[in-house]
Amino acid sequence: MKVVLSIKPEFADKIFEGTKKFEFRRSIFKNRDVKSVIVYASSPVQKVIGEFEIGKIYNDDLRTLWKRTKEYSGISEEYFYKYFSNKEKGFAIQVKNKKKYRKAKCLKSEFNLNPPQSFAYFKDE
Image 1 (cartoon, helix red, strand yellow):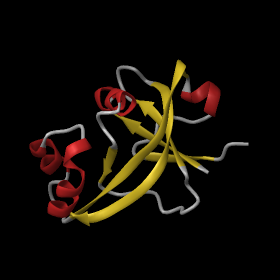
Image 2 (cartoon, helix red, strand yellow):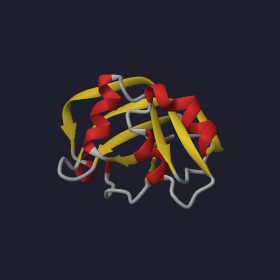
Image 3 (cartoon, one colour):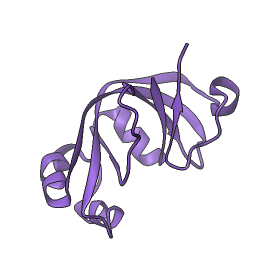
């Protein structure tokens, strides 16, 4: 089972460059069978550009989460705390074995999905 995540293009690029090894979320999918993430680069790209396997998923208070992930967060501390404003805890999905597609794919025609607000499940055959 895979999950499609909408990620801003600048952060999606950092994932595939290897400078961002954690994807942060305020809330997360509940299905424990999810093993990998399909990366949908949101506007203006609006394409699926690759995927990665999920390493660990951390769910900590914000200070602990930042301390644990800051070196490979791909974002500033200021952005981190702004993103998680009004939250006491957050999630960090560890990026493992990333694979960028040679050619970006259309979410609708190749996955039969619409761009997710936060995430969408995808069952690959």
